Length: 206
Image (cartoon, rainbow, N blue to C red):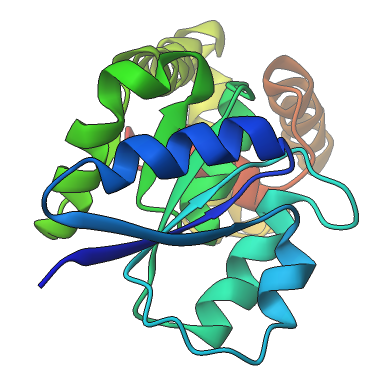
């Protein structure tokens, strides 16, 4: 049984090339391609696709915005991002939305078979360039903890633990104004605005 693939890619020429080389693989079959996500989402046909290769920058609907509706339409499909977009925030959002693979388009011909095989075997895969960006991002976040003073770390830990500003002040035997000042400094240093963002940075590294 061949693994069925659908491509969503606004560059028709590139999509045709992708389709051709996928169909040359013994265990894969590219059924067809769509030039934007809405055409796929609005299609009444049943394709039985196992994998979708999804571009990001497309007309009418951004690929990132399409991930959730695609998974709602077909919860069992595996979405692999195939894009020149390699900004780490975009990569992380794609993963959060439900993508299980990320292929930088410039290296499609070198890695597409590895990505497809990995996903078929219930794994996930990022091409090395993309993976390095993700690892660098989290390494950088961890290193950033050291930019806080001892007091700021204490206040940050109190925020992460769900303590109110007054509880933090009482626990650390400092004034409420001092707590507020430290919170402002923490948020400014990390360029964040919320407790959730703070947890994402240091919540597991206390």
